Length: 400
Image (tube, rainbow, N blue to C red; front, side, top):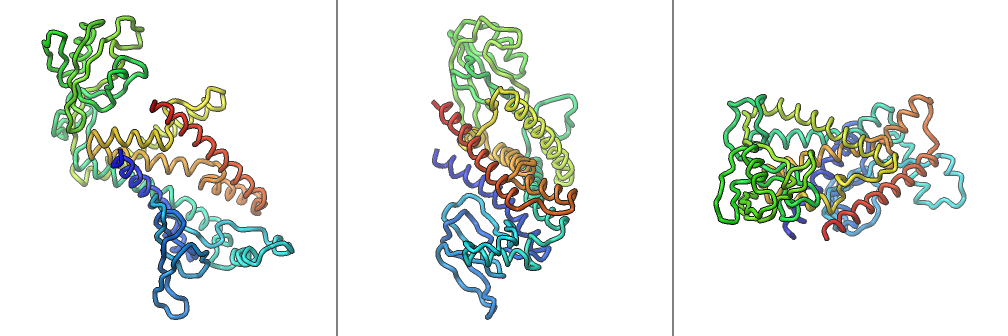
C-alpha cells in the first residue's frame, strides 16, 4: 500500500507541476514577473534566486515571503506538484490604498499590482493565455503519455474496425466492469482481470478464449460453485463463487461485462496522430460524464457513485499498478485530461472561473469589482472543498 501511495503522489505531483509550469512559462514569455516557482507545496525548505544587485545566485531558507523581481525557485515540504506566484495575479482595488487600516505589506502589494510587469495590467488576450496555459499543458502531457503507450503497445478491445496489422499479442477475455454487490464483486474479481479458465466442483476445467465462451460456461453453472482462474498483471489468482440463478434481462449470472482484448502497437509517426485523436475523444467522453454528473446533482440525485475523490483515485492507482506499467500510463493520461477539464470549467476559484470574469470584463468594457470577484472565488473554493470532503468520506466508507 505504501508503494501505491507513493505512485499516486508521484502521478498527482507531476500533473499539478506540469499545470503550474504552463502558467509560469507563459507568464515569463509575456514579460510578467513570477515571484516564486515552487516544487511541492509550502512551507518552504529552501530556494535559490538571482540577486538583483550582484546577479549571482543566493539561497533563501525558511518560509519568509518573497516579492522580488527575479523568480525564487523553491523546494517545499509537501511533495505534491508545485505552484507559481505571479505578480498581481490577485489584484486588490486601487481604492483600498486610501484605507487607513491597510498594512504596509498589503499597500506594497497593491502598488505592485499596478506596475507594467504585473499580471493585472496586461491586455485581456495576454491574461487569457496565462490562465489557459495550465490546462493546455495537461492536455499536452496526456497526448505525450498516450503516444508512449501506443508505441509500447496498448490493450484494446478486439473489433472488426481494428487494424489487424497493428495487433502484436492476444491478451484474452478481460473484465471491463464489475456490478456492485454481484457474485463477481463478492469473490473479488476486478476490472482488468483476464479470465483464463473456469473449473467446476469436480475440477473439470474449460479454457476461455472468447467472451461468448465465458458467458456460456457461467450460464451452464448457474447456482453451482465454480473456480475462476484469472491473470491480474503478473499474478495468477483463483477465486471461487456461485453464479446467481435469479437474474434480470440486463444482468449476467456473475455480474461482469467482458471483452476480448488484444495488444496493439503503432509506429511512432502514426502514434502521434492516433494519440491526438484519442485525447480529443477522451475530452468528449469526460465532458459528457461531467454534464451527466451536474444534471444528477442539480436534479437532487446527488453525486454519482462513479465520481471518486483522492482515496478512490488512490485505490484505482492500486488496480492499475497491478495490471502493469502501460495501464498506469493510460490512467495518468486520463487523470491529466480530467485535471485540465476540471480547471477550465467556468467555476470561480478555478482557471475557468477567472477566464469567465475576463470574458465579463471584455463584454462590459471594465473589470468586475475586485471585492465581488474575490468573494465569489472564496465562496466557490469552500464549496469545492466541501464537495471533495463528502466524496472522500464516501470513498473511505466504501473501503469497509
